[in-house]
Amino acid sequence: MDTEQPKYKMICTLTFGDIYLQIIVWLIVIFVSLATTLALWSSTRQIYAFATVGIILVLSLPFLLFAFVTTLFNNIEFTPIEEESTSRKSSRGRISSSQKPAQAAG
Image (cartoon, rainbow, N blue to C red; front, side):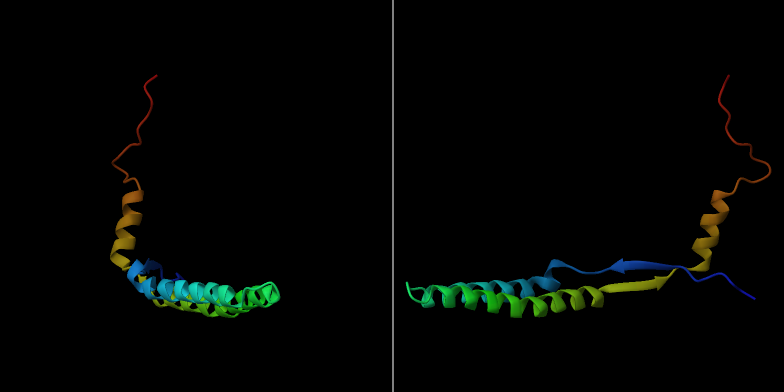
């Protein structure tokens, strides 16, 4: 019975182009929020201006994080490592009976 677990290699294929549009949308949200703040800014409505910025950022942040995380997870691949390469690496690490380990000159 084979009890050895298969070995996998993790490859991340995420590039800047994958998240470029998300960054642009986030910048647009920030600029719209700042424009709303300036539109509401007056001596009597300053608290509304700050509340608007806070609400926009707090409500948009979970969506931004969800988009980043799902994009990252969609670009992670797990590929099984072939048995040949695993056995070659393990056989290289062993010293054959005809070879002797190096010793320091004394």
